[in-house]
Every structure is written in C-alpha cells, then in structure tokens.
Length: 107
Image (cartoon, rainbow, N blue to C red; front, top):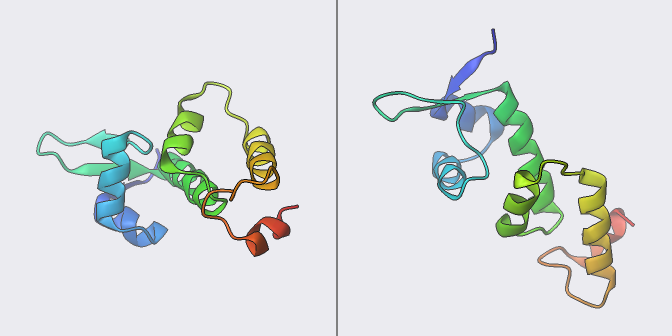
C-alpha cells in the first residue's frame, strides 16, 4: 500500500507551500490522490513524482500554462519538452524567465 500524506505533510516533504499545492490543484496540474468528505487533500508518492516534473519544468522556464498542457498529453515526453525549450531559448526569444546562464548549463 502506498504511503499517503496530508497536505501539510506533503508540503513539508516537498518544500512547497500549502497555498502552492492548493493552486496547483485549482488549475489542474497536481491533483491530490484523495479528497476526504470534509475536503482535506491527501497525496501519495505518485504526486511527488508529478510535482518533481512540475518543479523541473518551472526551473527550465516553462509557464504553468505550458506545464499544464504537457501534463495533459497522453504521450508527454520530457526530452521533447527540453528540446522545445532549447529551440525557444535559442530562437532569439527571451526563453521565458530562464536566464542565459541557466540555459547554457543545458546546452
């Protein structure tokens, strides 16, 4: 059986705020594995993996809107997403909010 964490435990374990987790639930990029009848959110190890993907993509400069689209795709490929970000960053655009120094680490 998978370990289940309350939202507070999950926030502490992942270094995210409860407000961030509520917002991610609200916009649909990170849903809790279970919501009790009283509305309490619970997360499993699967959501930790999903959150790691979100954090990594945010670090690379993807917007939450872009991340949401990636997460909704059936065959989402991280390598494809990274290649897209690299093309976007190299194509004369600002590359989102990612700095030139951070982009060069992934080149």
